[in-house]
Image (cartoon, rainbow, N blue to C red; front, side, top):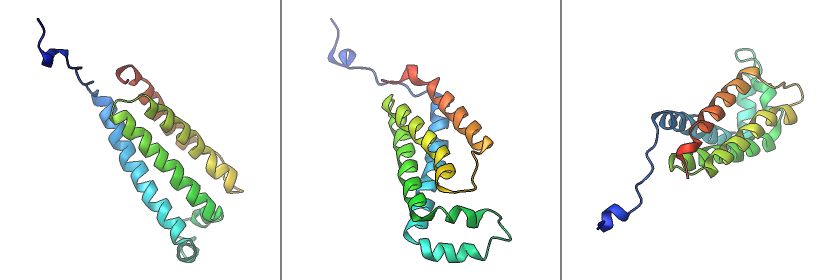
Amino acid sequence: MATTEENKKKPLERPEMLKILCILTFIGSGLAVFSYSLSYLLFDEMKEIVGGLDKQYPGVKEIFSGGKRFFLTGFVLYSISFAGARQMWNMRKIGFHLYTVSQIFLLVLPVVMIKSHKLPLLGVLVSCVFVLGYYSNLKYME
């Protein structure tokens, strides 16, 4: 006869690759949530500071041409990306869908909101690697 401990559902074990992907996403999306929220909340001040840095960091001024809505939208999308990784860390498949959708919108966001911005090949490749990495771990999630 089985004991009550044996009848309890065994928690799903998190694969090493999933741990690595989630930790990298927590770092990247967490930093992005922080920087996008600051850029939104302190937009005028940041725009003024960035105006003097354009010679040292070409393209920074261009990013602020997207306006406050660009940073607010980025904040929301990176928050969804972070939440998706959190769900996958907890072995929930819904996290994969949240993460993937947010990554698609994050790739399109600057193209739509910043006039001269083109889809970055490196950004597409990195997003694809992460989405495929998470996809390969879906079989371990509920």
